[in-house]
Image (cartoon, rainbow, N blue to C red; front, side, top):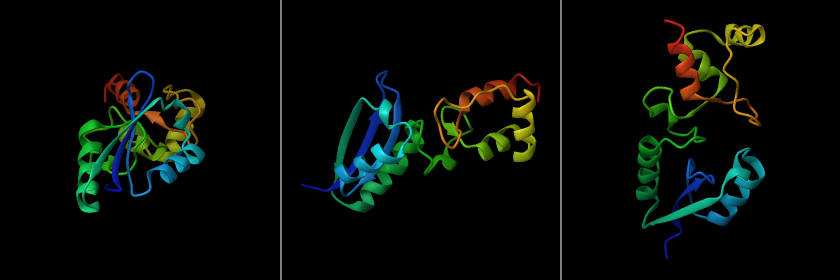
Length: 139
């Protein structure tokens, strides 16, 4: 049986949270449990096996681009636009066309009212929320 596994993690509402690969799935899952701020929201995991690591990595990249999981950072630079994914602070700044320092000031004085996703460290924002706010600014 192949050890090349593509896995998908979903929350209780069937939102795709993360897509990953592993040659040692249970060890990788343990790593998520210890280091991923979102792991406690996972309620379902699906597994797909591949014959080779090359096929596995190609399938992972395609799945992340096509399915746009909420917490993947790898391959997220190839997604279209900022919507429907999680953004780091620098990505929020880039999306709205300001520098990081200016974004910090906008957050502090209330000119950027979009709140980060609760419980995320480092702070992460929902890309759809950022795009919606920016679209409403007439820019």
